[in-house]
Length: 399
Image 1 (cartoon, rainbow, N blue to C red):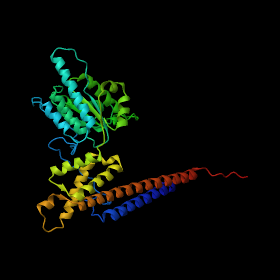
Image 2: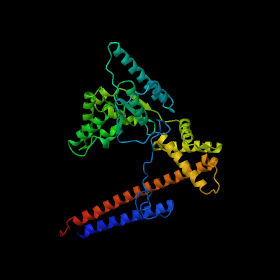
Image 3: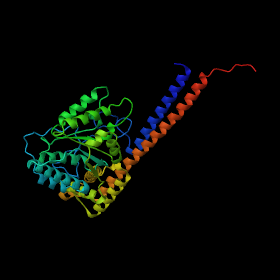
Image 4: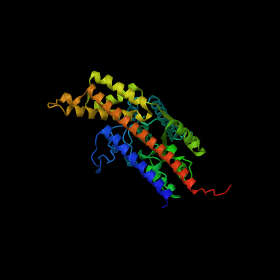
């Protein structure tokens, strides 16, 4: 290693040390001194919060209040399991909070399929009907929940044998080498036969970057939709604009997907209803002051960014309220049953302050990282200038 490379390496080591020290100092200021990192959920030695584990549990029945955690695969329902009554499924749909437009479109589809089946039973001509669907909307608006319900509805109507749902994203379909993507996608399709294949963030398949195999997954999927038109329903989901671009990027996709469901964001009142449902299920109740405070909490969280996640964000708020209540009650010597059931305005304020503190910490870390990256870029440019100057031949020409 010559002197020039040694200078550059030393500069990079110094920058790395400064970034590490600043991050540790920032974390200690916010979270307090941290214990050395061990394993599991312990906090890493650099002071950054440990990643959260997915501890969501599937509710007893689909609900906009608690959208179930997303499994990569769902166990196929037995073919001999009797289908549910369509009246019960429609009632379950209509009882969900919000989703007015989605409910209307699903009920329309149920009516269309019902008449389609009756015409076939009476030996009348029927028009070819595609059951594949495009779901568009922000995160936490109920797309996965409705996809699960649709799989059960299609089985009830006799359009699918099993009525199960297999959920994947790009990583579940696309491999890293030529020829592997078709095999990987075909395996997922095989598991979904007789039910619904739900592809979340489907637009990620259409990356169009060099050495990307997303198109191979799309081609395999389109062929399967044609070969298994009576035994497979595909639902693709994602953000509004990106899903439009995805569908219109390929004539095959345009021809097979002609049913669109848009999932509007929940209103503040609807999100408060979702929280009320979670509180009722958990045997909790808000005081009058707490209700006003939690409404402000939801409003502030929801207007910060779409990362709040609507129903998912409400679920997070619910969990934070329980933590705040537990912290408050842990200081009481005599805890009654009413105490265990009551969420106070003090709990709401504590939960909100904790959220805001965490958000501020994340923002400060992002700004520090951006500043460090800018510094590295500037020093790299300086190092390159020094390197170019050292490599330039000396001009010894005598005048």
